[in-house]
Image (cartoon, rainbow, N blue to C red):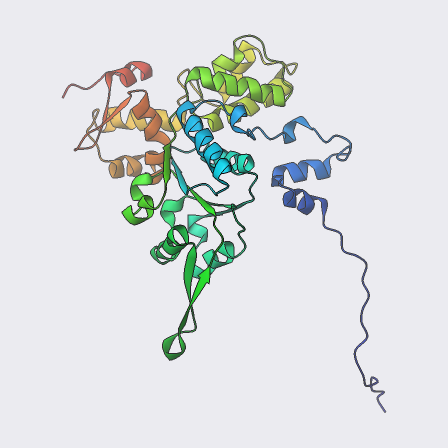
Length: 369
């Protein structure tokens, strides 16, 4: 005879209190994954709270920001005026090439207003319910940041129109004969969008932003200041002239400048004494295949293909992408902006053309057309 379990409620299994793994707690507190892993594997993780490789290089306030003087002045006036009126900021759009500080300025604006920020991206918001979850958790004055906002789908874009203008949304539940539209009021918030391709934004969406700011490339002097500040935060010893040398090869972009600084730091710690000297910088950047103007191997391949395969141009971007085996978006968003800025490439109605300066830099003979 088989014994049966007694009737009644099932016993409750008591478990020990679950503790969040260290890496998860770091992520919850705003650290990056790399920072969390670095602290977990360190033997002195709890005592060394200011490890140099975990220091955030992003500024926290407008006073700490370097460059984009015109944009910073406009932002400071808008923030001061909003504080006096006790109102949230208008919706704003940051646009420009990648790596110029759109996300950084968004966090600075939220910090200056003392507001909470909720972030997402255009490709992540697929349906109206995704946006509804974000909007219903927003308090008065909070910032909703949408990166790559030009990639929003049409239904989502049309869904947020009344949220931006009338501070409400019309949410449809069920479908068919049982469909019902609920008018859901929201709290006044600030939507900040960032995009690298402002031309792809629809006119209705662009017109709903009260403030539009274009971010330009940085000068070598501004990048030198940024690198000096980053080196101080990373506790690096730099010889005179080394920040300027890295800044000159940073393509006018702070993200590239800080990335090169970290690669030079690694090289100095392995191949040298840890101090950044002119020789260390030159050798490290040579290993990274970065030349004196900041061109990498992809930039030089682009120019060589235009000069040799297409006899200097004009050549279409699709043909160049097929020749190099790269995506068209990569060439348009990563390679071309800097080459156009320094005058190495011309855009014409018939396609791209190489300039005499580019041929001289690469040691190529310019084809006569």
